[in-house]
Length: 185
Image (cartoon, rainbow, N blue to C red; front, side, top):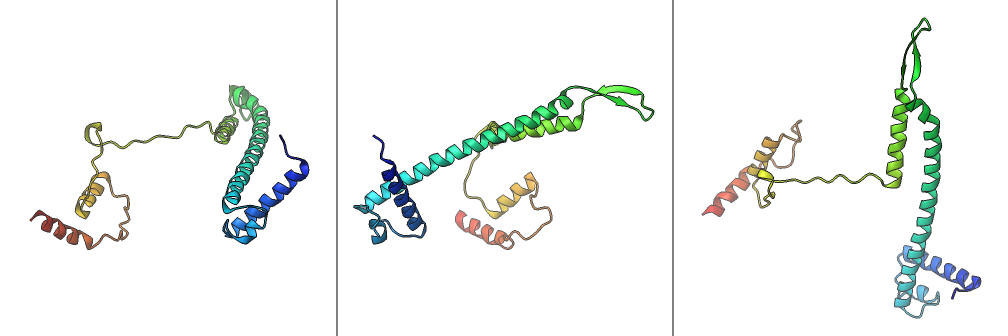
């Protein structure tokens, strides 16, 4: 059963005030929140969650509307540029003689950018997965490493800091090596 419009308006007003107070850092058990008509701290907390869920649904509707408008704009732009990107046009030399028929590469580039924008807008691009593997494609062995071992890895892989700025590790290599020597005894 749906609530009357007056009750819906009261609930919306109460929830808006609840959210305002929570944003100000007021606890659920504070008398200001209980004065809104909640019987307990738990009731206020539950209603707060409901208010956030309702807000999320409203935002979802707004996002869907925005996405639809943007898709319609992209459709109009794509429709305008598509013929130039897909139909060869005559190319003339300086004397006005027809040399050949070619696609308008700027129009092709525009189509590709519009398609890329649509894919991003609608979440069509799959995220790229990257996997790091160890020797022979096996698992990467992770464990404690000395500064000297890390520096050797950097030398092997290539220095990510070719300008040689201070990385804060200077002087630690000898200390780390000394610690390694003590661990072996």
